[in-house]
Image (cartoon, rainbow, N blue to C red; front, side, top):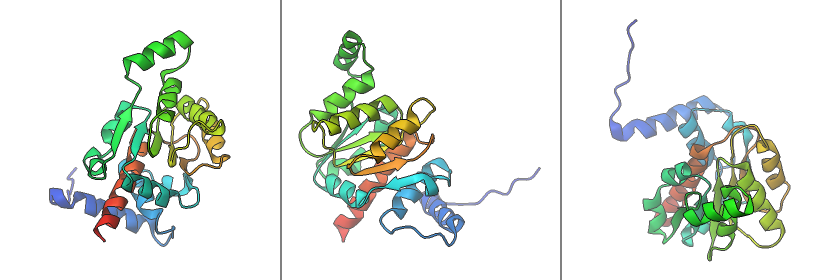
Amino acid sequence: MKVELQRVAPAEIEQRSMEIITAELGERTFPSDQLPVIKRVIHTTADFSFADNLVFSPDAVAKGVAAVKEGCTIVTDTQMAWSGVNKRVLERFGGKAVCFMSDPEVAREAKERGETRATVSMERAAALEGPVVLAVGNAPTALVRACELMDEGRFAPRLVIGVPVGFVNVVESKELLLGMDAPHIVARGRRGGSNVAAAICNALLYLASDNARE
């Protein structure tokens, strides 16, 4: 079988991908601030269902972009998501990305308390100074603990990206966040993942960079 490959220059691959995504979305319309986030997630996953299941609280994108411009700390719940965040762009604004999951002290405390590292990591995130964007792409326990801390008035992230993936307490953790008065971007249902969390973070970073050039 003969396969016809497109000849695309390396620098043009992403642009061409975005053109294909735009064409396949067809005549569907989305709020202008949300569309770059939706397209970035589809670009990362090749899954057009995210056009339907991404839920944005009012001004969620604007609040996330504002946090980036203020030099926020992006906290992820996996090293994979941390690796996927464009730290070069984030550092331009004086921000940083962190993940506490591999911290030996977090592991020790979690073992002593009989808790998950994800739970303890969220408590570390709540203790950070300055604006925080929380990106949960794997552990529903992290999202549940973050919601508990917010409900207790101990954590006030500028934006919560709630996109854990899986089957056990995944849907429930997202619905818990959706019921709270907290800025959020949520992938409703079972879909999500660390790559989705990183993609949403990067969409916010690129929007902040574009706005800074205007």
